[in-house]
Length: 451
Image (cartoon, rainbow, N blue to C red):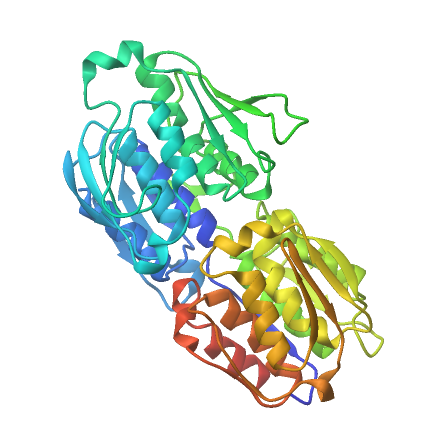
């Protein structure tokens, strides 16, 4: 690309918020319409799993991302089908959230997953659920999907003796903790006792956990904390007598309609595109008040020389006035999905980019630290791979070798390395189709705005 980007983009709804709102809506006792949802492989898998469990789900896919919607009638904590088989594909959020919902049920179910998802960690969630009396039968490898699961409320006689707390390790993924939090009002109501979740790990109050708590609050459930100043010792407490229902929060535009924020994770690629080309971009509907942790990418880009303005229409980012972005040392623990975004533009900075505290992304769709290092090295970039991150030395656009980029069937690898190709010639992304996991039209949108 030989010219600066000058574009206006609207990205689909947040995957993370969409999936949290889907689960909470299924747990409510009302019919809720989620508007502005993301339509992708992950959300389709989640919606289909709910259908397989007997929930009435209606899908409306619109050309306008802001008008895409899913309507679902909840079961007030009950799953319509008391037995069955669900498929969660490669969707980590669906796998963790659906597993927790089935664990706090009165039925028996089988959970199947893709080969990729079978390799991803589930043991911390299974351990926490086991402490509560959920019966889990591993159908292949211990601690991993697929499993057969018998809900802890399947035996009504055991409810009086039900444990009132559990412990979960948050280090490998905060989705385990988020899943338990969203089910906590159901447990508290069934037992009539406050339900406690003790965090064993260093990410008890990470960005995605805080997002979960915010969405729960928007639907009318509040969770309190003990030891709130210590991520590794925090205890979350949910009191009985709370139900999920639309409150008076601004997220509910009208009646039982919940507005999903645009996806800041997806927006990050376009912010970075403007930054690395020295151009500008307006991301419609995205504001600094977003509950999504990836909004912190803007803080990094601002420190690297970009200017940012939050307007009524959305955030406008302009690239640096100098020729190159400045290098940076970045702790990306709480917005690690943007690790690949920053790494992909790091070769064009004026000094070293150091990314740290993201060891957990080695166990996501791929080993993202190793994958980024390997592909950058193929391009001729000087990279140091560490257990918890990367250090990348700049080479400029003339120092990049033409490369066919292996994506490891990881959507974020594909989307991130497309940014490298905006500046350097000869970058070809293999298996672009893997972007359908979260953003089906990503390359179409990128082609449109780059001409």
